[in-house]
Length: 71
Image 1 (tube, rainbow, N blue to C red):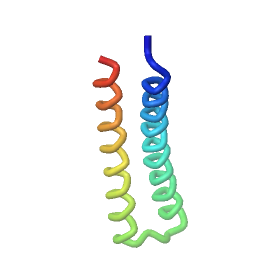
Image 2 (tube, rainbow, N blue to C red; image 1 turned 180 degrees about the horizontal axis):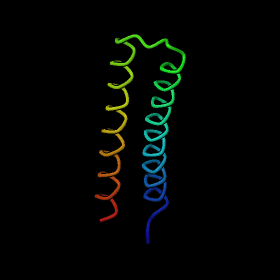
Image 3 (cartoon, one colour; image 1 turned 45 degrees about the vertical axis):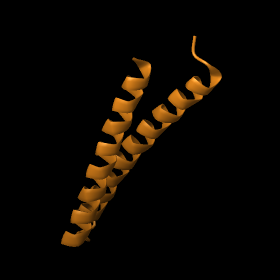
């Protein structure tokens, strides 16, 4: 049986994965909004794509950590 602390750690990991996923979706929406508004600057696109890549990698690493803790 898991201790209270272990349960809290798992909840925090799940929250972190969800946050990273929301960030990636939000960046997609921002990029799409800028494109529809014809306000895309190449530097904005690069920055948004870089942030999206970072958030996706974070989500993957957090997911890996969660799987390791569960094992």
